[in-house]
Image 1 (cartoon, rainbow, N blue to C red):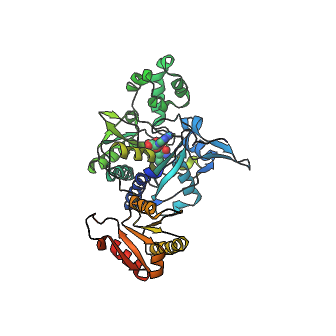
Image 2: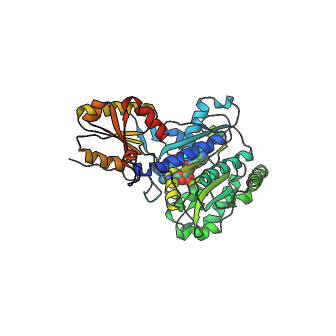
Image 3: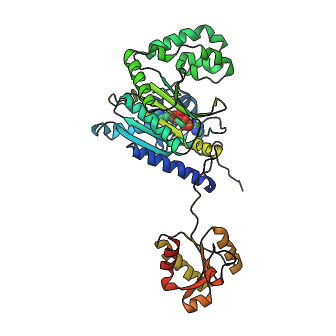
Length: 430
Ligand code: HAM
C-alpha cells in the first residue's frame, strides 16, 4: 500500500500549535474590529487574469510561483497567490464604491499558494491575515494601516519589531526613476546575477530586491526612489511620516525598499523582527495600490493594505517565548462500568454540555482503574463514576480530582443524586 505525506512545502497545523494560532486569530480580530475593519473572505481560486493582471506579469509570483490549472470546464484558474487582488475584484463586483468610503476590510487565515523553494518560514501553502482599505487616498489611512499591523504584534507581546517605510512614487514620477535606475545599472549589466540580467529588461524595480551577495554593493549605490518623487507624491510621503511620528511608531526609512508585487504606488512598508542588529524575514508587508482597481477593469480607486504571514507570527511567538494561553481542558470526566452505565454516562455528558460544561467520557471497555487514570490525565476537575450501584441508587459518585491527598474522604468523593448533578457540577465549577 502506498503511504502518503503532506506535499512538500505544506504543513499540518496540529493541535499542539492550535493555541498559538488561536491567539493570533483572536488578536487580529479584536484589533481589526477596534479600527473599524469588517471581515471579508474571497474564494481561494480566481480566474488567472485577476492575479496575472493585478500582481503583474513581470513578478516572480506570476512568472514562477502560481498554481495555475484548467478546471473541467476549461477555465484557467489560479490558487490565490496573495490576498489583495481578490479583495479588489470583490469590491468592484459588489459595487462597494456606493458605500461610505473608505471600505475597510480584513481577512484571516486565508490560504496562500506560491511555488517557492520551501525553507523555514517559506512554504508553498501559507496563511495570511491582512487588511485592505479602498476608496480613499488620505495619507492618514496609510499611517492608520501601519499602526494597526504594529498594534497586532504589540498586543501579541512581540519584541524588537522594526517598521521600514519607503515611497516608490506613482505613474507620474516612477517612469523617470526607473529610467535613472536602468541608466545606472546598464554599465554594470555583465556583472549582474542571471536573474538581474532579466530584471533590468522586464522589471527594473526588482533589481533592488536581489538577494545575491555579488549584487549588494550595486544595490547600495543605486538611485533612491524617494529622490525622484513628484510634488504630490512627496507631499503624501511627508504626511505619512508626520502621522507616524505623531503616533510615535518606531519606523525607519529604507530608501531601497521595493516590494515583490507590481501594483504598489507611493507608500510601501514592511515589519520584521530584528535580532542582534540583523533584520529577520518580514512578518508583514504592504503598501498603497492606487492603480489596481483600474487594472482589474474598475474605475480609478485608491487603496492600501498589508498581508502578514500567520505561520511566521506563530513561529515568532515560539521564538520569543511569549506566553500562550493553555488550551481549554475538560471540566468533568465520566467513567462508566458496563453497558447500562455507559448509556447513563452518555446522557449525563449530553446534559452537562447543555449546561456549557466541557465534558469527556471514557470510551472502550476499560477497567475502572484505567478510566480513573485517564480522568486524572485529562485535566478535569471532577470525575463522575457510574457503576451498577450508582444506577440502582440514583446517586452518582463524584470525585474531586483536585482535592489534596490528605483531605478527608468525604471531601474527595461524595454521592450526588442524578437529578441534582448537573446543577451541582455547574455551581461547583462555575
Ligand atoms: P507579501 O509581502 O508577498 O505581500 O506577503 C505578505 C506576508 O506574507 C509576508 O510579509 C510574509 O510574512 C508572508 N509570506 C509571504 N510568502 C510566504 C511564504 N512562502 N511562506 C510563509 N509566509 C509567507 C502580499 O502578499 C500582499 N498581498 C500584501 C498586501 C496587502 N499589500 C497590500 N495589501
